[in-house]
Amino acid sequence: MKRKNEDNASQVGRNVRKIQPNSKSEKNSTTVSNNSKTAIKGRSVLIQTPANKKVADSLQTRKLELEELKTLREENVVLNKEIEQMKAERKRLLEERSKLREEKRRSTLEKGTLMADVCQMEHRLACEEARVVELEEIRANCQNQLSILNGENIQLDRDRDLYRNELNIANEKILTQTKKLTEQQSLIDVLTTKLQEQESICQGLRNSIEKLKAKQ
Image (cartoon, rainbow, N blue to C red):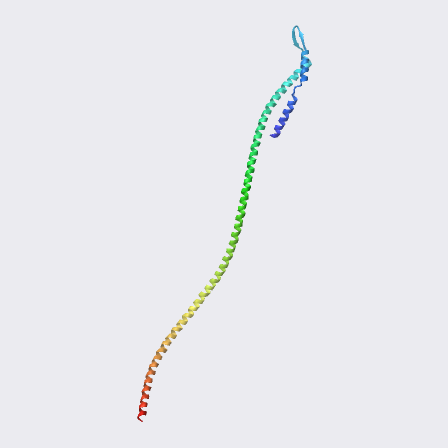
């Protein structure tokens, strides 16, 4: 569109230069026209001569050129309007470009802020992931210790069952020994009673012997 406007403007300039009047030629044409008039019976008669024909052709050409100039001027007015419209469009586009640049600047700032937030969140995520790894290691250690404790608990259950069996056997032995002790204690009591009776008998015999000795 811009190239077309420049071509039209150049064409208008050439046409304007082309149709600029030549005062000298017009003066000569007027002189020839005046000289070609002769008085015949009190009337002026225009004699058709090559010079007159040339002047007529020149006038016709000028008329056509004037019409073309008028057309070109009208086209020039239209082109000027189009140029004004293009200037307004250019101004609008420049304003839009300024707005877009401002939006781009704001977007860049927002992007920078977002990048900072992303970096901060990534750092936090890395810390949390490190903490997760640490907790997983602690959990693995706890699971190992739990496995060991479960094994020890199973062994303690087995030992308890074993000790319980041994304790039952020992209790049975204790009961048996208690019965035996009770029987022995009863026997001891009987023997003690018999011993006391025997001692009483012996003491009676001693007393009798002492009496007999005293009589002698």
